[in-house]
Image (cartoon, rainbow, N blue to C red):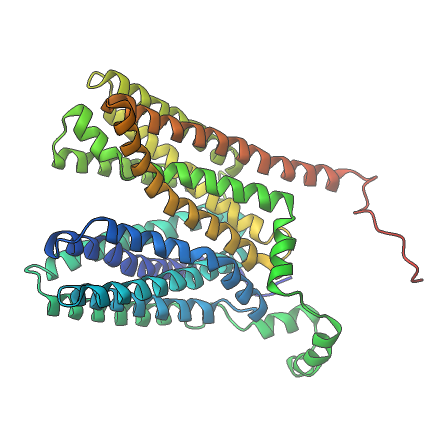
Length: 467
């Protein structure tokens, strides 16, 4: 067991600042550079869409990053290294965007390399941050801690977007490079300050756990390494994937995040096309959805806090219920596409946001719990597996949502029916995600039943010839 103390709220806030720094770089590359490529450079919107999708594809390395953190016993080097790679990728992405105005092919090639670095950086830093939280945050604080960290990230999104937007006006290539360079240096500096002496020494934790002096622990390390040969990455990943609960949660993450991300790019076009909302009104509608997400997050944080934990429902019930209500709200959008303006669109979108926020924070809290449920030695690999599942779902969600909408428009030649088909697909995804969440909870009940059954001593062992 880890002998290091659990994190307090100040430690959690420091991790939230690191998450905000990650968000600052990501929002610059996915929002500001997106607009510059399409508007100022008059390039096809497919180019930034491909680059964003590519950075999600690169995040399939998350399990390998988590495995590396498991082997090293410390998460801080992976977070600092990941943030440095992310910052470098963000600056190179800005440089590539400027270069596209003069040498398009070379600029695109550099941007592909930059977004690859962004994917690697997010994978290393984000996965290790969640692993550290899963190991050092008490169970009664996991839902509130996840809310604090994700709200801080959202604040980082907003502050960076507003600040960069003001500093970048009027636009010039030199100004873009200057802002990007300063931002990259700032996020690395802030992250290093936040992570300074936060995790503690892994070696000290091991010594405290064994009761041996640290010098003897270090002297015995080579002998222990010979006696206990650690499995490689492929074998470790296979072991984690063979865990029924880890596999069920991986499927849940994929289905829920696929449904969550598929509506992101088509909600505003849908509201404008069928309800006649102006661009400003559709932006306000998107803001209403994000406000609902925030309310859902706060509700789960309150329900999972120490004083009222369990009284307002378990984290498991919030995860299942959030998916069910999200599916119900999506079904409402199907009816909105069929009936048009008489449908109460704003309350429907607000309900969708609350449900999305509640199940997402409950899922993160569950992820933190399950990462160490089977032993901390594979916590990083488990977290990496779920992070990769989320990244794939986000990449596919944006692509499938828009592609399905365009295909439905082409085949059906009617906007209402086309949008109803897309929202119907997302409804099914949320229902399946709720079923998977129930599947995940069943393993918890089985473990609880076995622990309370006096006749169940432990897993059956194979007969051995060793006496």
